[in-house]
Image (tube, rainbow, N blue to C red; front, side, top):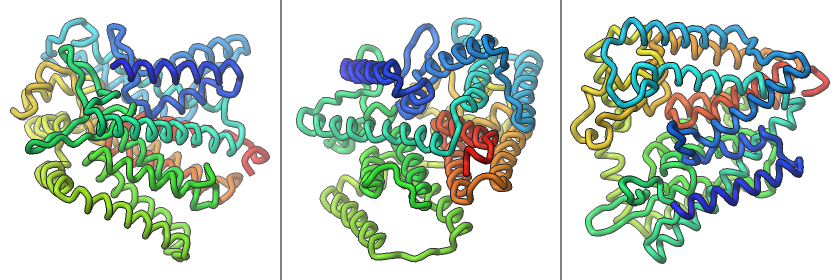
Length: 451
């Protein structure tokens, strides 16, 4: 993990330099660290860099608010209903419904785990009122999202450095983690060959692929309104697609296809089918030729990958989702209200399939799919309240009389993309929360600030 720590140290120093030179504020840093999914610290409990920066933001905001006699409050009623339901239902279910907790060590890992999880969610939702202090115009939204895209570009560069060094030396400079003194890498083997899956510093290969997929469609939605992040946005999107392929992530492939159709349907709603000009045709043909060349050069490899990672896998019921789905089939009484946040592993552990026991047994786990995580922890009622505040947020932006039409298209577009992305994969919770916060912040702006 030497190179992981070295890279994170260099990035940290660079961010601190930008912060003290007042080129970055803490929210800039928060957006930048968002796609670095494996940037974390074990201090008795695992804290990600995203959580650490969020906590610092909260503390500084609270200090400033005390001095200015302001309050850090969420005022959006649909969201308040969801948060109150989460807290009340979790406390009740954890204390009066669940009878047996797994013995996994300390109180905070057993019957008291729900307390830490409630705090985790409150910290996450605190970003919403905090961000309102940082968003003063639509250009601010553009700039913060550009920071996120910058981070993705850095991950792409580091990912291809990682791939190149492995190709020459057989060494993964950015392993995923260390287990029993050995580095675990994103290497996938078949027959006598080893296929390297690019992960960069974006978590597992699937984590990198999912972050890049969201980044791709953020750029695409802005480009639809003739707003560019860089001079060569098209080239960056092609690099994102090629890097997603290099992760060999089934989740990434499926997510890209899902979001592509979501984007097309949403785009058609606003603009109709549109026209393909020569420039678009050339770009599409270029991307097609590049992908075809890669597939042709590695036909045997990709044939095996297609068979084993797609045809032979149950994409709708992956490892962490499978026992939860089986638990609901056996105990449908938990469907309505769920098990409370942080508790589902206590109910689903006995349903872990044999092939997953070697790493899931006696461990805390949650659903990988965002929709299943919400239902398993908060039930169908919680899912209704979750979708309700999202729908009303989108509706408020759509009905706004003071936001330009092109901005409405962008705001709702990135919201829909992030929502579908999170519901598909819970890895994308942080970027989803950031985009929700951006929309709530936009609604508080005055007419002169956004037109």
